[in-house]
Image 1 (tube, rainbow, N blue to C red):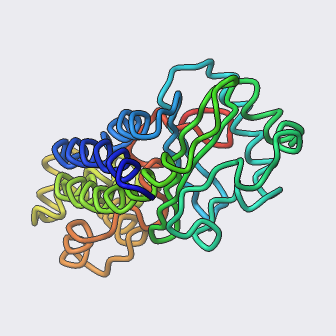
Image 2: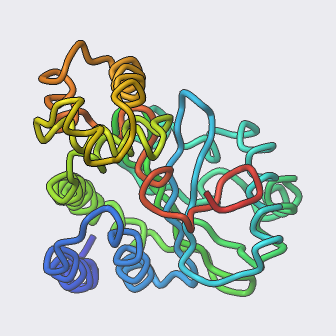
Length: 279
């Protein structure tokens, strides 16, 4: 790479890196910030932000543009059907490593345009060129992809190198965003996210338990019988794995909220998954 190419790489990269850190995003607004940042950095028409949960083999995705909900739902279902046809679609850390990969790295034009996943998922929305990278995190991966529509050229090596160079900053920003998100969570929100099977009433009882209220106090506050409170407390302990009030309070303040499912399952109602609908 010569000096002119290095400057072409460095200037946009430096500008977008500064913008990313200046935003100080949490997990809820990080996707929209990355939509704009990645689109500018690699000149993409559309950017997607997805989380793939390996244990459940499910995924959730956000898209930078508005589109038809029915069409998007069908595309998500088609992607789930065909994603195992090639490692490029499977989003595994072993295949991607620290690289940004393009469809042109693996398929010639004729082969690519005849792939079922391309015909059913991408071409109906006029998406032709793809470049993406993944970030491994616990039991899931974050997939960030840029798309160009039909008629536009393939992503260049320079644009690939920009995205690869930008990847460590996305990794760091993601970790910082998670820390900011956790810092904002109240103990009850932490329980609600970490233990989605808790009922609204159990969460309400939990909110008073972690404040040190007795069963009698809670019965008075909620205007219910003491036996009802005891039943809710027992169910609460069972579902969160607590042996008493102190343990419940510790769990409410410290349990990892995303241990069962990734953030997109918990933090937004606009993420789309393989079930044809937003969660």
